[in-house]
Length: 430
Image (cartoon, rainbow, N blue to C red; front, side):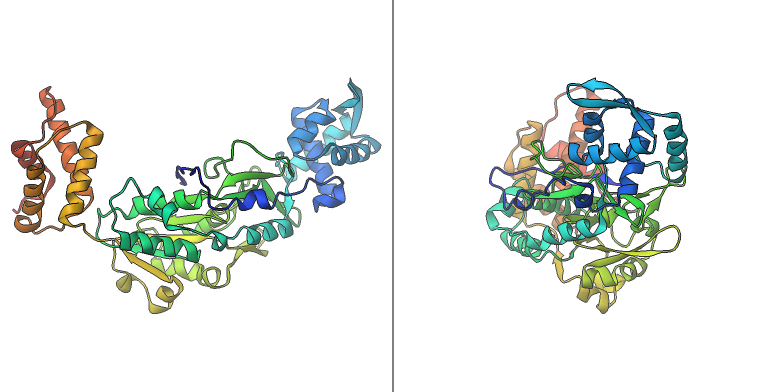
């Protein structure tokens, strides 16, 4: 299942690549890059399912100019598949004929897609290359702004910013509870300051592949005038965890609708694909990376259609692997070489631990004696022999709030409440 990642747009965006390359609206069928017969078939299916309506309404549903729609209508009318039933201003209102119904049912039995007109695979490839995530130019102020809600040292922030500028894969590793998942999600806030064009669907040799997914792609509120088959969005971020299977990396064909849904990496093109808990998926790490040896090196991916035909698509994705396993133990050197940036996310210092505790307490509206937190850090580190993990302040405060709720009183942070929380939270030796 895809996990939607919320992104925050800054008031000072990096570079609006989307606005710089606005897709021009086609004024003829030839300019669409799609065969006329395929567009006629789509128009007839839409007319059968939602008509009658005006040519203007058909233009809105297909996301094509009225000039293109007029050209398609003339052909459908000549074949006696539709007829004019009236006028709205100077725009004809059309309805499907009995002959058109029979033809529409034949078309729907082969392919039930009835959304916006697709773009060609060539147009898709060209636009994705133009919008490559490698074109993002990240500056320190953008990284510090995005990570302002976290307590992270400047060295780690520098590594993260450098990794984003590379546009290549990143490996976040370290002990559990150190914030790797949150860091991976926050990286999407930085790249989301850019905008990219996402197509509703792509056509390849008569096959339809849907790409735009409102659960993944964050549409920009004010869409410029352009080719309506494209949607201006923030750079996407897709997150998957233990549910990832090898099948999710290939075309998803529906035997009912008879068209394809683009795989994870296609939806993440020009953005981030976050593999959380890497090494704990239902597929072995080697199998996953074997699948991506060529894409990570050459920026192209090969997908298989249901009939066995292989197609090539661009792989302009920044893959972020997050794991608490030792990379040297789960990956061979050949794979580690292809993941060029490795960043260890480790335990925090005493000062960072206290700052994280302060922020969490402030969020809960709780006051406390700072010395209590200093003693807590010392107890965890010296008595329990545990590293200071960033998750501990939040979890211990949660224990305090749960106990107060159970007892029907206000939460208080003191030595006694922290002692009870520590006893409940950490394992006690048998």
